[in-house]
Image 1 (cartoon, one colour):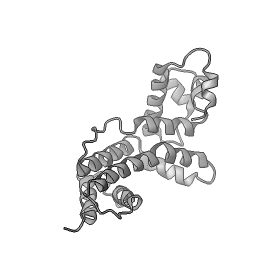
Image 2: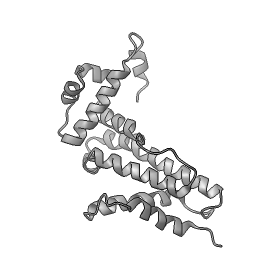
Image 3: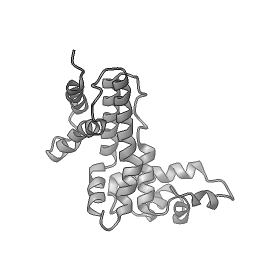
Image 4: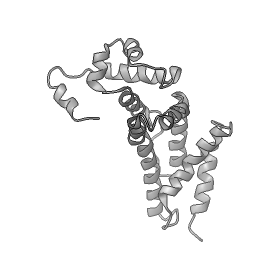
Length: 197
């Protein structure tokens, strides 16, 4: 988010209740209408605020929607435990739940289709949701490597992609959301990363 918002808010403090209502309305409209068909006017109406109130907080629809997705990230996830398998599964399950709740695959398709015309949308999605989620998975793997539970020379960025990849591949194959996909993905990856006995 831009730094000029702090300057604009020098008068009356921003209302946390309005912020929450706007972000919630944006997520609900994203899920029901999709990114392309939702509008800031609809968000303003659903949140019972003016459109100018939204623009005081977020510059564009892309800014608002990705901020709402950022706020939703890991809201329902269980606290990390220090057990590499449990923690990886929890992060992947929360990722899948969030994607399904907001029709996230359609959103990803829109981001890719609009990249040439609205590069801000994909850039903000990466910055606020994709990269932080990858960082969480990488942190869990780094801690496991420090404990000697996975091989020391593992390329963790590739490992993170291997953990997330099955969700997208299964969705494209018509198998999206089947129970146990996260456990299977984690077990396959960890089996390949175990240090030699």
